[in-house]
Length: 253
Ligand SMILES: O=C(CO)COP(=O)(O)O
Image 1 (cartoon, rainbow, N blue to C red):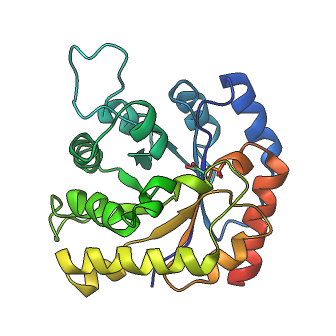
Image 2: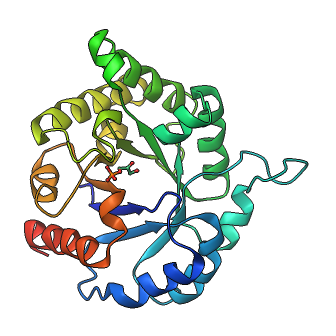
């Protein structure tokens, strides 16, 4: 049985001071659903100290796939694991689009995160052009296959997949839960074709793209959707708490 994960991706928002204030105001009491926040790199250290004895986990939004070296401006997986990061987002569409990250570099990132015993959150998803050209599923299939074919079936750390349709990110126009479910089911099948049904059944698939407190319940009720990766609504303590509380209610935990 897969457990639900609710994750906030803060993107390039909040100074360290603002991040600390956010945590002070979050006030989440029920601890029964896994909750993750991925702040900008510079806030991870402060966050790790504040959340040390909390159930809330922290992670990173990106990583450079080398241990140390002459890579000016980059952050390595060892640095993140030492700060207690549980998860690292890999291949977010904003990094694919703005920084030209391709599947080749994303595979390296995923493997380097696993090497340091953290869990990668692999982002996949189609844009409007892919849909117009009838290539949405092919794009997602390639994104999934390029990574999962490089991971051993026996590796204990199983990446989380975040399905984020690019057209739904930050637009207020989320996918319908039925549409997201259909894609999530396809994603699971692509993984099953590589590593078998049992492995595929254990992969958690999140939905991301304009998630809010009104639509979260419908997404997690879908059979193949195991949580959400939340951008905008994770920047407001009240909205983020409301989403989390909706998940608690829906799951009855
Ligand atoms: O990109 C996202 C999370 O990684 C989604 O962002 P929004 O929730 O703002 O649409």
